[in-house]
Image (cartoon, rainbow, N blue to C red):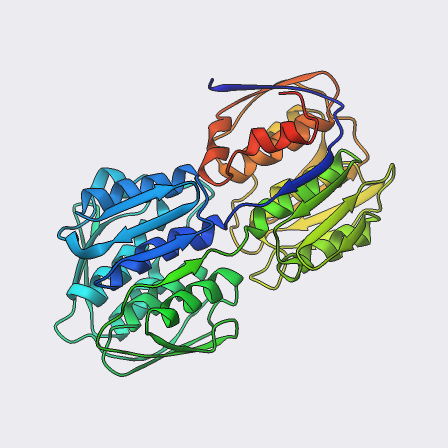
Length: 411
């Protein structure tokens, strides 16, 4: 089961529903620990990153039940720091820094793991914690944070960071006084976290703008919250529909979250029809080349850059893809070139000449979004493609293969 075999020349047709957002869930789950009473999260995706997080919490004494897509978390038994082995498997384990610092004024968290997409330091997280009165030490490959007095602070992030924005929000909810985060991330997942925390009794204003204000409170209580739809999963199916020249209705989404992608697809010549909670994507035989630059939201999402690159190999002319978020996020380029794509890398920019007929071959990946991108490449290639390492997809996509099969794909 470690190899995925895909027949080329397939077209996606039908409808599919999107699951809850991975990047929301992995922040909302630790956020519930700030309360002393149970919380209920609906629309939680059943993906590997969520199961790893739940194993981390179980190891820390937290009780939970996870039925269908509803997760009930009881934080009362929380008693220890996360297992180094488990925390090292999940980059989002760093949210436990903000949570434990806020709740116990002390945190020990292993240096986080995750996809190998280049250097992703957490210096902005630590900058925020230090401004709030925490002392930070790095020893035994773990971060040790202590704060005898955790207080509000005025924090300007040197670069827009979703993780740092969320982590500082978590710590600030139970800190004394007012915390102001400037140059904050505006992603929908940041807003989702703020909605959860406010429902728990926090006082947060400005989420979704570049300035967030958090007034610390004495305690938080449990709540009932629904995770927002995964805009990256929705984007994956949008790109797959366009690349295979199919027609797919993607439901259970928030179309506004997808505007950066929808705009580029329309520019290429893809037909996009938006409804209240769904989008219909219709592909066409010919596409116009476009230039894409990844930027923090509401710019073009870096997570969809590898997938969009696949689509650009089918455009008639030269396209440029500039990566300005994760500068090493080009691990999909070598396997694409192996399939016959005409791509040249110059620094942080990929130059793509098309259209190119991709040829199926044996591929390997260790990255979530690259794995999803290579599946799309395999669908439009001639002959058969074998992907080793495809289970990375299970880290961020719920029932991805079943959803593809429901759209007529043979895998």
